Image (cartoon, rainbow, N blue to C red; front, side, top):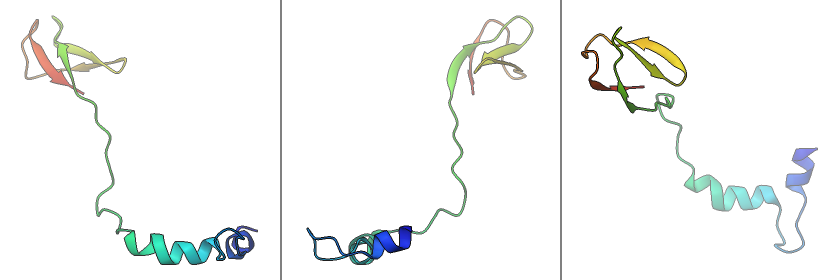
Length: 74
């Protein structure tokens, strides 16, 4: 069904969606990156007395910071 829709000539342009894609969009496409995108969110957190920080509603142990100090967490 989609192939037939994309092959149908549009009145306004006098060409099909597929032809316009091949002419305009395909030359501008770039290859996918070699490594997948990894979403990370970093914040400044206060380290608790038990060396734990809360990030994104999860408690994580912070080994490098002292209790009461601020640290980057994600």
